[in-house]
Length: 212
Image (cartoon, rainbow, N blue to C red):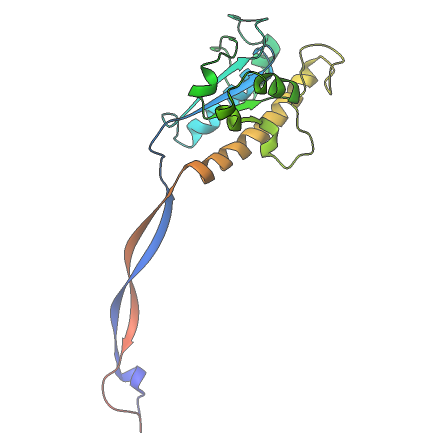
């Protein structure tokens, strides 16, 4: 004797599958990377983050710039050692020109990320109170105990030796921090858009009475 399942025919049942995808925010987000002279660390962070953003297809949604708290190198290109080291990893810094942080930056940018505590404090002393929440250390977005990207410009300064190894350390730290920051940005600034896609799943339909 055939069972009800064997006697029945399978019919298609429409179910809804809910999917979530990242939706671009209504406004353009602006990010400013800051170090002392704007020729080593902040241009590196600028170039690295710019490529990561482009890789996510967000070039028109997230705008990146860099500046220095001091005016030592205004109008100059990034340090040749920074350009060379970044180029070997696929980052282009050659088109950047150093500038100093201006009073307008505190209003215009949504995130202002310092490479070390000294530059953070320098900006906090000049930033209007209503914009100070925008100021953070770049490395604060990582789980590392290190909070400052060391300056590789001078020999025997910070954790760097003043040679190319110092610039490599900057790249290592900045690459990791920029990826973490991008993840943070997407999670906190990009709303999720939920869509419902119909799909068919077979469900049994029984004919006849109970099996005897």
